[in-house]
Length: 447
Image 1 (cartoon, rainbow, N blue to C red):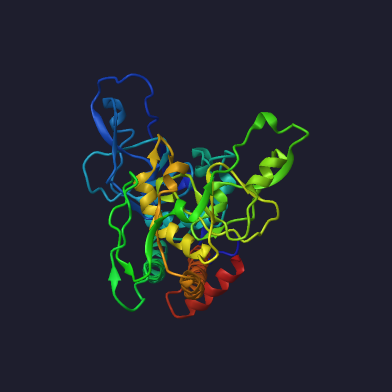
Image 2: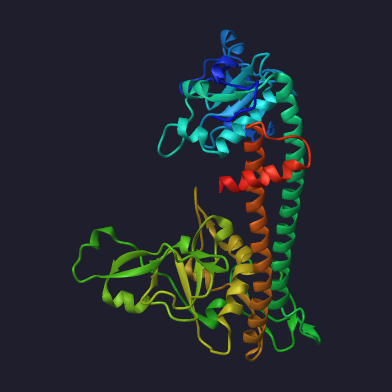
């Protein structure tokens, strides 16, 4: 840490504050002691503490003072997203904290808000990661935190920096909120466009209620459709099959052939992620039986409940590719039907239907092959589905360009925030218009 302004120094955190880890949770039988609310790392977000979901723990009288949280204490995440920190404002009565958090009480030479922002800067700059341990989940040991070098101007200067920082960050947060609102509106527009298209709501003329014979499923309301359209079940318009089940014991069989196959992770809603496609050895006959063809509609069989039946259309991106048993393949029987139209319908109307008709285990949801064949879909007359799907895909491409612009703006916002923090803790923020150039230059230097 070099090039600091005159009057600044670098001090270890241990010289500026008292740090302590919270209470390790008791794993044994209850001790019959009074129970008190406590903070976990999930309660501490960047700059705020959420008390809507507090748990309680037992504390002995001699532990209450040791593990108490007081107004003005800075709570810092010890594991996971290390360095995530917020100041406790003291809104409620007694509150303790668990071992997953560091509690920092600053001395008179350090402003807690200044330290809170510096920890964010150190986390985003990767400085805290250098002090962490653990390969799977990062942890920030207390001794390492105490060694953290902190740029240290006088307290009055710290408070001035905080005021300037918060002014810049307030405007960034407002811009981020606008981007989030735009993203939500764009997603609602996307869903509305798809629903309008697949239900033929833009088709002129009268609409009628198509009959859908009962199939023992929870179909909910079946919307009226344009003249000539009908509600049909997936199994009536397509041959639907499950995929291959991985058998680790037979992977060394010399008669088996190595074959790329799609997993649930590859099959997303409205797209296929094919950068990481695994291989599996299967019997030659099984490969021929399950080999994907142009226009096959893929739907997920299992996963989180809201991901049932998500999927997209196979376009022969990988020769000889098959699919695992947790991915269904629907092959349309009639060329007049667009697989993209069917995929749009399964991803929107089919998703909630699959949620209602799927099964939930302890961790995962699933829907059976027999059940998914009963999914109701709106079917246009003739070859109208091809025209509708082509027009819809073009409009969605336009929305994707807006999505990309919003994503680029969010990336710039993240870089700008890093630039603001870096400029602040190198003593370069002035509170004047020149800050914009300083922040932009600093953000570019961090890329």
